Each structure stands twice: as structure tokens, then as C-alpha cells.
Length: 324
Ligand code: ADP
Ligand code: TRP
Image (tube, rainbow, N blue to C red):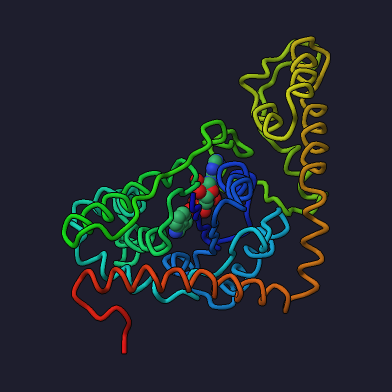
């Protein structure tokens, strides 16, 4: 099993990112080989401020390490440190049919809103396919919204193999169904673009304030409440074990509990889960050279594998295995 995933450094990570995606990568580290990268080339389709991009890349790396990504068990690197990936993107582009990209949601959604999309966004799924195929990845843990892109990678690998002979490994998406949609403050899907996020590394004071602002219904304090339709409880389930969930559910059903109390419990549970990561993050922040070393060592390992794959691919198409 060779696991690979990437995450875009487009802002600070929120609970949706953690439960929908990051948590899975961390659980899978230490497989035969695992690669996790910061998708900075992808982020260039939306961020065009160099200082912001640099800061986001550093923040993304520190967040992942603080949350438990262990560089001895998984290779953490920046996408842009492996130029073989952009080379593979071109080779794949030459066999990518337009209709395959026209139906991909990143581009289709933007076009449906009447916004101008550039070629980077249109061809983004090909870059993502190269990200996956350049390392012979077998399993790709992603959030539910990325399944379509992993399917594109599969389709392109199949098409490449049918033209040039068996050469690329077909990858499979892995999705955790129970965390497919983490709700935000307003009960809609938590997303940066909806402004309804709770960031993982929010200061405790800000996190508490945000939790207190989660939308709830107007059931009176003394009345019984329905845990299953409550955003606070939906979030609490992500943090608490079954016993604690059952205890809070009982408080909902018995009546006499205001939503403020449930929110307080959610805050406590979140602090318990993320508290140790806060400390690890502060240590990383104090040592920028160590961070850079981890990313460089990660890139060197990832690149060695990508070079092997690229030699195979170049030769299959009739090019020299290595540029002179
Ligand atoms: P955002 O919607 O805030 O821009 P991204 O699209 O950058 O987040 O998401 C990065 C990863 O986190 C993706 O794999 C995505 O599936 C996952 N993810 C984001 N928001 C959620 C959510 N609310 N629930 C589950 N997974 C999510
Ligand atoms: N497109 C993914 C996202 O927006 C990030 C990503 C880029 C990725 N390349 C990847 C994820 C390869 C998995 C595998 O969330």
C-alpha cells in the first residue's frame, strides 16, 4: 500500500479539513510508504500574493506536523520541490480529452457562476493526476469532494497504459463516510468560502466565542431537545467517544439544559483533542530551520521515487528515460 495525499495551502486549516481529510492521512502514515504534500502549485490558481503564499505553506506544514504527521513515518514535502510532477502533467495533458475536464466541478462551478476560469483551473485535475501517478500511489485518502479528481487520475492512467503499454499504477480513493460533511457555524458544510469555519489552531478564547455563536433553534431551556438535528451535537460527536456522546444526548432529551451548556462541552472536548497539538505547534514555530529541513528531506525522498516513475513514462512515450 503506497498512500499519497495533498492539501492546498489556501488558509488555516479548519475542523472540516481535519475530520474530512487530515485525520485520515495521519492515521495512514507508516504504511509501506506514505507521501503527504503541500499543494502549492495548486494554490497558485487562487493565491497571487507571494508573502501570503509563503506564509500559508509554512503554516500548512507546521499544522500538519503539530497534528501528528511524523516525518520519520511519512514523507512531508512541498509539491513544487518535485519538478517531475509538472513534467508528467504535460505528458498526461497530451492524452487528456477535453470532455473529461469540462465535467470536473472546480471548473464547472466557476463557469456556472459566470466567472472567468483560466487554464490552470481547467487543467487542475491533470496536475492532481500527475501528483498521484508520479509516485505509483495505490491509495489516496481524500475528502468526498475530491473523489471525482481521483477518478480522473485513474482514467488518465488507464488511457496512458492502453496507448503506451502498462506503465502507470491505477490509484484508488479512500473516503471516510462518517466525516464526509462537517457542518460549520451555520449548519451548512464548513468551508472557508462560506465564512463559517472554526480553525484548528484558533486561540482558545476565539474558539470558545465561535462555538458560542453556532446557530441553534429556539427551544426553551426547560424543554427536551433533539440532539440529532443540532449542529452542536453533530460536532460534539466528532470529538467525544460513545459514552460521552450518550451522556450529552441524555441531557438533550431530559430537558432543562440550555444550548450554552452543550456548547461548553463541545469547547472542552475540542481543547482536549487539540491541546497537545497547540504545544507542538508553538515548538515548531520557534524553530524554522528544523521545519525547512523536514520539508527538504521529504522532497528528496519523494523526488527519488518520482524520477524512477518518470524514467519509465518518458521511455514508454519514445523520449529518453532521463533528460541529457
Ligand atoms: P474549503 O472548503 O474550506 O476551501 P478545501 O476545499 O481546501 O476546504 O478542503 C481541503 C480538504 O478538506 C478536502 O479534502 C475536503 O474534502 C476536506 N474538507 C473541507 N471541508 C470539509 C467539511 N466541511 N467536511 C468534510 N471534509 C471537508
Ligand atoms: N485538490 C486537493 C484539494 O483541493 C488537493 C490535492 C492536490 C490532492 N493534489 C492531490 C489530494 C493529490 C490528493 C492527491 O483538496
